[in-house]
Amino acid sequence: THTHTHTHTHIQHIHTGGGNDKSACLSPPGRFCAAGSSKPRGSEVPIGFYSLDQMGGKMPCSAFAGFFCPGGSSGPGGIACPAGSFCAGGTEDKADCTAAPGFHCPAGSSETSGVACIHGRFCAGGTDAPKDCECEPGKYCPSE
Image 1 (cartoon, rainbow, N blue to C red):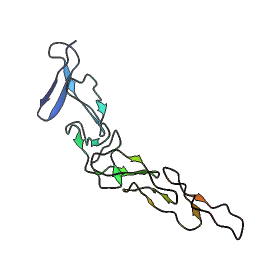
Image 2 (cartoon, helix red, strand yellow; image 1 turned 180 degrees about the horizontal axis):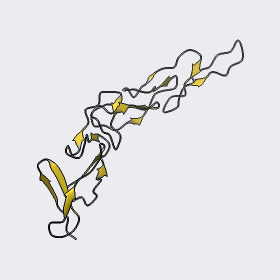
Image 3 (cartoon, one colour; image 1 turned 90 degrees about the vertical axis):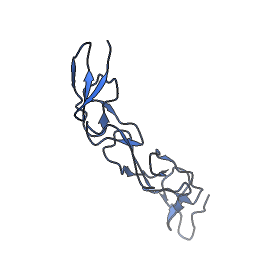
C-alpha cells in the first residue's frame, strides 16, 4: 500500500490505497493529518503544538510563561501550568518544580524556584503541594 497526502483548495486529502482513492481529512481541533496519513480523523498534535481544524495543520504554540500546550491542544495559548510544575511558555512542555523547602509552585507557575509558602502551611519543596501545619498550640512548623 502506498500513501500520499495532497492539499487541494486548502483541504487535506489522505490516500487510503492505490490509485486515486482519497478522502478529505476530517480531523477535529487538536488533531491533524500528517503527510502520508491513512487516518481520516488524523493524529493528536504533539506537546508544544496546536491545531484549530483540519485545514490548518499543526502549528507551534505561543503560550505565555505559566502556560503550556499539552498534546491535543486546539488553541495557541495553551492551558495554565498545573500545581507542582513550572512552564516557560512558547512550545516548551511543563517541567517538575524544583523549589527548595519552604517554597512551592502553584498552578500557573513560570519560575523553577516557586513562591514562598504561606503562613500556616508547610511546604516540603519540589513538586509537593503545601500542606496544613499540624502543630500543637505554641509550636510552629519548621522549614525542613
